Every structure is written in structure tokens, then in C-alpha cells.
Image (cartoon, rainbow, N blue to C red):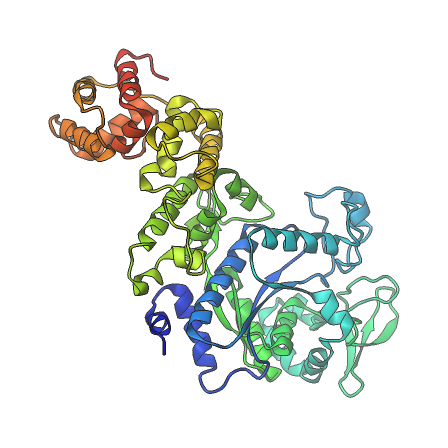
Amino acid sequence: MTDDRIYAQAARAWPFEEAKKLVERYKSAPPKKGYVLFETGYGPSGLPHIGTFGEVVRTTMVRQAFQRLSDIPTRLFAFSDDMDGLRKVPTNVPNQEMLAQHLGKRLTLVPDPFGTHESFGHHNNAMLRGFLDGFGFEYEFQSSTDWYMSGRFDQGLLDVLRHYEQVQEIMLPSLREERAASYSPFLPVCQKTGRVLQVPILETNAAAGTIVYQDEDGTKVETPVTGGCCKLQWKPDWAMRWHVMNVDYEMSGKDLIPSVQLANKICRELGSPPPEGFNYELFLDDKGQKISKSKGNGLSVEEWLEYAPPESLALFMYQKPRAAKRLYFDVIPRAVDDYLTFVEKFEGEAPAQKLENPAWHIHNGKPPVTGNGIPRNALSFGILLNLASVANAETKDTLWGFVSRYLPEANPVSAPFLDKMVGFAINYYRDHVKPHKKYKTPDDMERAALTELLAALEAAPEGASAEELQNIVFEVGKKHPFPELRAWFKALYETLLGQETGPRMGSFFALYGRKESAALIRKALDGSIG
């Protein structure tokens, strides 16, 4: 056994803990299908969103961990439920009146309101693939319509029909009385209209592989359950999919735990072990409310990527997946700086420690090297953001003027990641800092401390390092009767930056320049700042 395998077996990071479930699952023999199958699901009635990203990136992290623990090949299916009927018209698409005429049809029969693809389902599937490809995920796209229409689900559908009563016994107690009275796991697809029907099932014939249902016009229709003539309600559909594909791992949100439990029971009833699973907590908005696609609260992937690199979003998804977390604009700067910190720490860590570092999981064991286009902590996102604030920067050139003086060897070509960070800082400052800046007028104690800090900065050696400047700030603060040093730094942030939090002031002064920092303090003292 290699050292890498030994380290992986001892790793405690949550993706390794999840991957060990799969090692245990196949400890006696590898899967007959020849690979371990990971799956993520997507409902293409709408566009991909931040939850889609979170589920795929987290599943990918578990897959990567498993690949370090086992030699069994793996596959990841990104499964689109495009056989579903269109139940309501989304509010964020064009041609809504046209879509309303096709309610009930499977999504791959509904015309594309954007006019670019074969159907609405095909359009959203293309969006999903483009979304996943843009992040470089390794996956295989799978279409529910294709599996149903090609017959690859036929055996599973016949298995559900043979276990019809048992499936009903599992499902009915979970339903309201009114819903239970007409519930059936099968949804016939009307051969005249293409609509996926929610109608009573009058008879089942397992031997013939058919059901009899009452059509919307009142007539009785006998139809095969195979060949795309029927689809399943989503919970039995989930279970049947696991059963047919022999899915080994699928995670889902905490809100779906009851659904997972039902699908697990149905899967076992059909004769297959359900997949290993993981239930992640849902995100909260800035008010502590759960994020909802219909409400539009919270953050979208596109909004995050306006202000930060995708690696920072991957880190946010990695950290504490079973804890409810606020997903709003104010978490972005911390996520970026935490990412940079983990990347920088990675280089000096022992092999076992590296497996616990989020950077390992974000980059599949090969994070970038700091200093080679990735800034070290001295140039954190927080520092750049505050520099943009005091310089009132609206262009990259303004910030690069300071950065180049601080790091003469860096430029937008040699440090492309840093160049992106500069742009992100300007965007974030413009949209989320500038509108809320409010400078505090220093009181007598703060004025005395600022006056002493001004003199100390001007007397500092010409080439004083960020650490030396930080020590100066500390020493000045200690000489004045602040209740604690934290109050001194808060006073600096409020009087010099117009906000309650900020960066290491020594690093900020070093980057902004001693002369410029001294001028900033003078403005705070004479009331001309802001």
C-alpha cells in the first residue's frame, strides 16, 4: 500500500469520510457494473442555479477522495429530469403565453421560448452542460427523456408495476388523505396530446406490462408502462433510477430527507441497495431566511462570479456543508481571503495535512503555487478592497499603480489571478462598499492616537515592512486608554476607511504608501475625508 493511500485512509476531511462509505460498500468485491456511480440530479424546468453548482462540486469532492482510496473506476452522471411535465410557466423566460399553451407536456416537447433549441427541455439542458463545462467538471450528461424513450428504464418500470401494491404501501402514508385517494406511482403520457397526466389508475396488469387509466376526456385507456408511454412520480422515479442504474452515491438537501427515506424503501423493494447519501444544509439569505428559487432571495452563481473567483465559491461549498450558512454578498471577501490562505498554507504542509486542506479538495490535490500568479496573504482581497475604497478606484489601472509599487515584479500579464482580484475588488467596492461608507469624526482620544500615529509613520524608515508598520500601529494603540486594542483598530477603520471592519493596517499602509497613508490620516484629523 502506498503512503498516499495510507494518508487517505486516515484523512478526516468530510469528503474522505463520505468516500469511506463507498470503500466499505465494496470491501468484499467490486461492483458488477465495473465502476462506482455518482449521480447528481437537475430539474430543467428552470435555469441552473447555485444549488446545482453546490451539489456537483461537493459530489466531485467525494469522488476525488474515493479515487485516492480505491482503484475502482468511477463515473459521475448529471441527470436531467426532462421527462417531467411543465407544471407552471417560469416568470423569468420570454413567450410566456406560448408556454402556457403547452402546460403538462414533458419538457422536451414544450417549444423553446428562447427559439434557440429543439425544446424548452433541450434549451435548459444545454444551459446545464454549459454551466458545468464552464467550471471544468468531469461528468456525463444523462436525459430522463432519453432513458424512458429508449427503453433503458423499461425493466425498472416493469419492476415497479410488479411491486405496485408494495410501492403504494410505502407512499400512501406520506400523503394527504385527498392526494392518497387518487395517487399512483405511474403518470401516463397521453399519446394524443403529449401531456404527462395526473389521472386515476383504474387497473394494473403486471403480466401484460400495462395499466388502465381514465383519460382527461373520461375515456378508459390501456397503455404499456414501457417505451415512454408512462413516467413515474418523482419519488418512485428517483428510486427506480437508482435501481436500474445501480447508483452508488447521491447527496441531497436536508429538506429532502423524508423523500430520500421513501425512495430508499422503494429501491430496496425493487431489489437493489439504495445509494450512500449525504444531506447538506440549505443556505440562508441576509435576513436568515432559507433561500428560495421562487423568492429570488440570496445570491446567484453569476452574482458571486462578478465579485470573486470560482475557487472561492467552491471553498464556501466545501466548508461546513451540514451547517446552515448565510449566502449573501458580505460573505464573499472572507471566502476569497480564506481561499488564498489555504492555498498558501498547502505548500508547507505535510502530506497528511494536505488532505485536510480545502485547497486539496478544490483542486483535486494540485492547488496553484502562491507567488506564481496567486498573491500571498500580504495582498489579500480585503487589502485590495480597502485600497479601492481609499483610492476611490474605478479602473484597474488605478489599483495597479499601487500594487506595482509594492510588488515591482508583478503586472497583469505575469500575475493574471492577481489582475482578476484587482477587478473583483473594484466591482465589489463600487456595488457593496461605496454606497454604505460612513466616516466617523474622531473623538479626543482617537484624535490624540491618530496624531501620534501620523508622526510615527512619518518617522518610520523609508523601506519599513508591512510587519514593522503593523508594530507601529500596535504600539501607538497601547499608549492610549482604549478599552482594548480592538477598539483602536475599529477607530482606524471608521475614521480612515468609513467602515466598521478592515484589513491589517500595517499591510494596508505598506501597499497604499506611507506618504499617502499620512495624507489620509491628516484628512481624518481635519475633517476633510469622505
